[in-house]
Amino acid sequence: MTVQTIGFDADDTLWQNERFFRMTQDRFAELLVDYTAKDHLMEHLLTAERRNIGHYGFGIKGFMLSMIETAIEVTDRTVPASVIEEILAAGQEMLNHPIDLLPHAREAVEALAGTHRLILITKGDLLDQERKLAQSGLGDLFDAVEIVSHKTAEVYARAFTAHGDGPACAMMVGNSLKSDVIPAIEAGAFGVHVPHGLTWALEQAPPPVADPRFHEVPDLSHLPALVARLSA
Image (cartoon, rainbow, N blue to C red):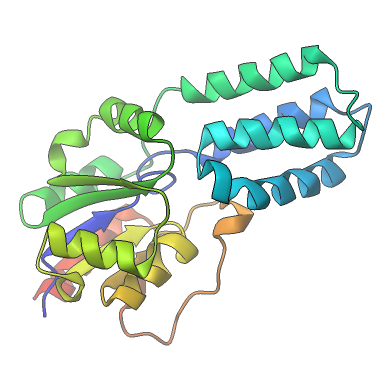
């Protein structure tokens, strides 16, 4: 069956995202340098993020709350109010940061928009993801947008059935093996990994190299040729 519907991840697939988290983590470490070493702080923060995903979901707001929680923990509840204010300010800056499209993102989406049904499938805070899509200038190229809490095989099966001819005729493109590629393949779709230099620890997973529906391209400029090959 040929590829008729293509799902795109957003953050770190179409535009930069993780680098702003890393920049904020560096700022966070500077704020708490008198209390703990950066490595220790990042371990605490990652533990808090993992613990809080079920409560806050993915995105900047949950990240801010995890930073505040971590600051309280590592300072034994003595964190100054000024540090909390700085954490909130850093998060608000992230929420207002301009969109920086990744190389070849626009060209790849434009090239495929005329021949395939395109779906943006992204997770995170609803308002923030809507803002980024609007500022990206890519919104009109997608036939549908799905902003979800988690990316699972069931989510992909539903999305590709609702907006296409089912997962067997679909492809999911993204930088996260754990969220974009593996569950899409489990749903019966092709999964295309587009590596990004920065990947959040909670999004890392081994590539399913033995699966015939797994593919990897070095960047999005190679995607139209892969789609053409699989759609022939």
